[in-house]
Length: 85
Image 1 (cartoon, helix red, strand yellow):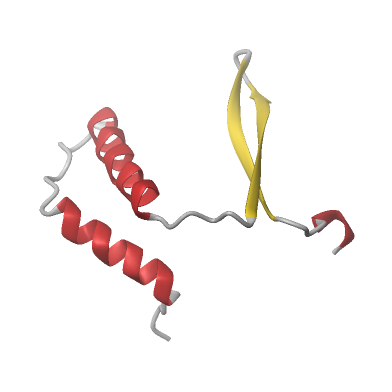
Image 2 (tube, rainbow, N blue to C red):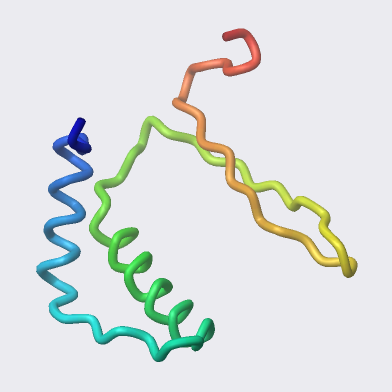
């Protein structure tokens, strides 16, 4: 079965790909270079995504090894109560 994207997501991805043009491949084994490319692509996606005024976000810090943490973001539609679903 072929993968089908939501029409809004497909439009954002198509616009992002058109704006990005040709992205050179990261050097084999270069995790830092690959991460930098992914950061640029994600920033492009974020800037093209329409505003969602009916969505609220809350950030959480999840503790991990070495006394550091990972940012986790919870998205909730305004007016909803996920705890009661």
